[in-house]
Amino acid sequence: MPELAAESKPETGAAPAWAQVQDLPCDLTLELPLPGFKVRDLVQLRAGSVLDSEWKVGADLPLRVNGTLIAWGEFEVVAERLAARVTEIA
Image 1 (cartoon, rainbow, N blue to C red):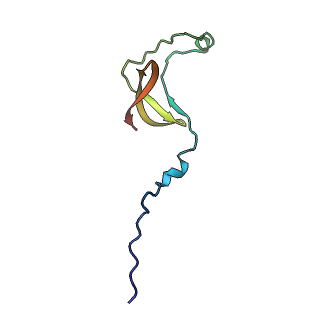
Image 2 (cartoon, rainbow, N blue to C red):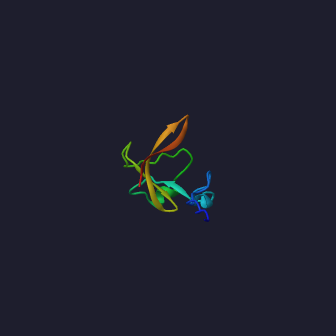
Image 3 (cartoon, rainbow, N blue to C red):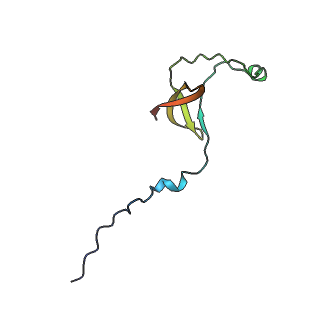
């Protein structure tokens, strides 16, 4: 009597299906809305300029990949560098 083939299982250590695209470049943006920002404000920007935002400290900011909202996050300072902490996945 012939043996029945074992149920197929993924190979140990097999990469997930998305692994084939994980090295594709994408644009990641953390948006800080500046209501009322005008072209005149843009033209006047210089190194060291400070932009006043009505966004509340601690309020989550939209995190987008190639324009698509993927998460919410907030700015924080880590070792004298500006960083972004992901707070919620969309």
